Image (cartoon, helix red, strand yellow):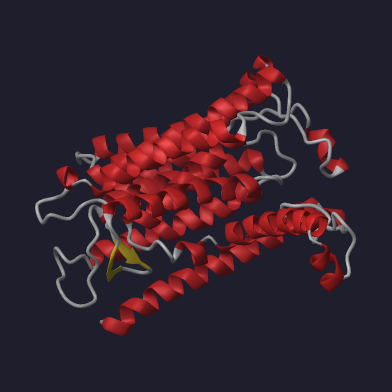
Length: 368
């Protein structure tokens, strides 16, 4: 527990001070954000704001984790090292995307296929290693499980290749979901603080009710939960420190470097804690934002191609469901202030996190 407090506190300080130092440095280097021309006009004033702040989030969390391990004389575990690999690996993909945007002076970085290839490679390596029996502990528990899970492993076991495919869908989907949500000052950062904070508490609870020390019907068969809690605390602290400078009016953006890494880590926690489908509840905001984009694109294409859609819904060709997607921009365009959108979306995230933790605890009570 001491390591968790230490890791979270150190990450917060590193991120708070590191981001302050990064703002003038990135400005001097010309690492300014490019803005979509078709977005809300109020965003045009943000052009040139330093981006790639995700580098500070990643560095702060990773350094804080290893320093906390060193100061408490603990050894890094396979689960935490795998999660950090996923966290940093997705950040590298995002960094390449951001760097191309900056060097080419355009709002689009890596082409979608190239970005997907990078995300896929990282996700597949993570998936196969997480299921590898070479990384099993003394009880034969691997970092991840091929069993489908909601709040713990079910009896339904997937073939390894299918389980890895599921991990790939979760990792790429969640990383892109956080990326889509990162469109307003502090929105994604504040939401991530709550979600990773929730996973920290989940891991602490799983450690206190671990099958290795508290066998019984209500125990959790999870490897290295306390060390995973340390990683969650470090990422939470890093996001918290970054939020000081990312809150409206933002002095720096996390960029794809931050959003892809945080989304990947979010999925990684769900996989390693055996709470895969619970992520849909805890990360409900990211799910809704992603669905808004899918609905917008799908309905737009369907209304252009299929006359029956136009007749049934009485719309014109190329009709859009929202004024703009992702969803946060729709509310901007109907007159909500940016700060209002962010705070209300934070409230939604808080409700999703509270609901997810409530379901998690209720699942334990039901079998305890």
